[in-house]
Length: 308
Length: 183
Image 1 (cartoon, rainbow over the protein chains, first blue to last red):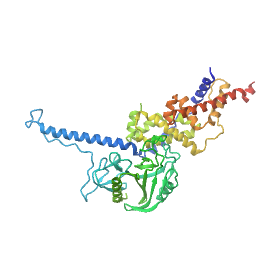
Image 2 (image 1 turned 30 degrees about the vertical axis):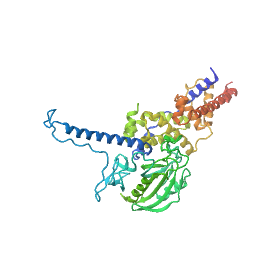
Image 3 (image 1 turned 135 degrees about the vertical axis):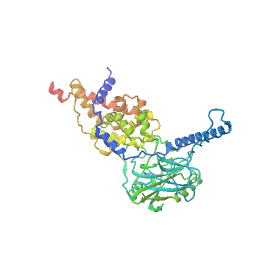
Image 4 (image 1 turned 135 degrees about the horizontal axis):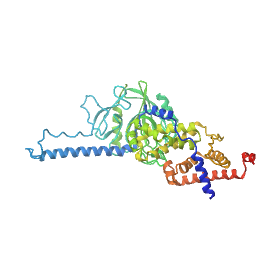
């Protein structure tokens, strides 16, 4: 036997021995943890997949309506073919969320393409138990980002090119935004506005502006702008060598946007909402289309937060 | 095999994820232990990896690739666990040797020497050895699973194997104390 094969055999024999059963208490601890943890919503894949899904649903709905309309036109009035219709066909509901009339109660937790109007998101729980974030969308160009049953942010519909806004309850920062899949090196961010601001301004993976005092939606806190590294590649989930090809800063509930490309700008409003910390995360680029940025300005200005 | 569970878990079904975790947990433990050479660290790494997997599951595009995807998370969790705990010491804690696993005293000495030599390897080198020699993956598969270039895997494998071979050869040239006593 060659030295090489002998060594390989020795290594294989060595590695064949050792612990290979995970104790039950570990499964129990994992279960206990996930029972209180919601899955992360990620921005990147959403941009294509969700829009594509919406487009398919919209096309399907339009096709059904068209068939129904055409069908009615061509149905013999005497019902000679088959049984006579007992009622007019019911149009299939469009996936587009319709706003309410001015002054009426905002539409709660829309799940899809939005039309101009006022909506209220409950990103962290049921409306009667969790904070509400009311905002007004000025055009039909936006879509809701949603955890099942909860709106967690909005983005420019179609190819958002990184323009959007998420509502986040941050629980930690990734120690290494590129290799973020583990949790062991996560950076604690406490529970206060100040603790999160300190953690963000202490990190050296991105540039953080000087924080300033701010009031938004009726609650006070701090505002700062993060600039993602210029070394990132264009597009969100295209960072070679990074976990899932994403450069991810935040962990937490809500809409945790990852870096959308080089020098992606994140404006963060870190607010104390009656003792609960909320991060409103606005994402864009310096050269994002002016129309999108202006509409984002308008949406941010419209925000009203209701404490649980 | 686990695809139905993965699909359900991806939609937020905690029962499905619990069942999934119990399906893949032992294998994860085996991998983590062999990389870290410490049972407690390995448990922590697997626990962290499973929790991370739950949190990130929606980012998994191809549900058929769940286990390779989980193994990549586990690998990074092992690295992070080792860094955090700082318990990766150069000293040696010998594992209990089971009679019958190794035949003959030379094999026992080889195992001890391999344990010492293995602990001197970097975590990255150990990982490549575990995925290649324990899981039986090809170099290309290892590269895909841990997310590094094929050339890097080959390099790590080469240096790790050379180091282990050197340890074994040195051990065979110098009779151990045990052998001397028996002689």
